[in-house]
Image 1 (tube, rainbow, N blue to C red):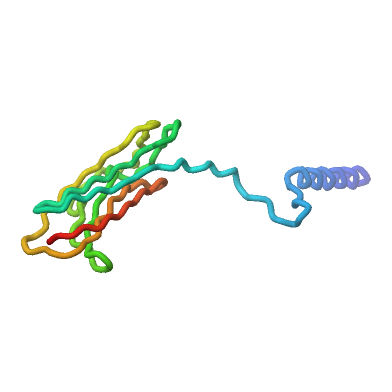
Image 2 (cartoon, rainbow, N blue to C red; image 1 turned 180 degrees about the vertical axis):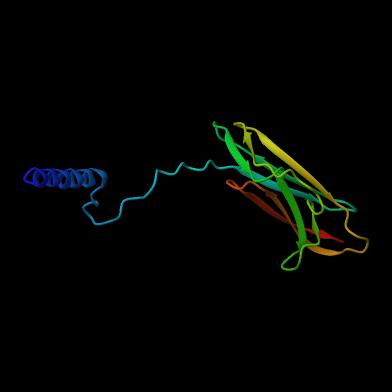
Length: 156
């Protein structure tokens, strides 16, 4: 029995030292240290949405990587972009490029090379008599790096 007491004391001392080694002290000013690993800085992408309105509305979304490093995007499906048109100001969408389309249900990653530009296009044929001011939204459907641009246009 006399040997179990020193062994228990040794185990308690080892546990205390292990706990002390696994914790970080608070900074002297009392502020909490940041949790988790440092976050990588997101590269700045350049994007634009061009709308050419006529009998057919032509939409062009461009996404450019102006940096010297490649940028990788994760997409939750085979769809990489979408366009939506709705009345300017407020209102329900009147057209969606992807409506009625099917896309693969597999996660995919795509890489935009340094200095490269992706160009995505869509065409909307407004019903006869459609008039007024509209807002078009072009969107990259990436789950980790979403890009969205809006442009207004008028149908006379």
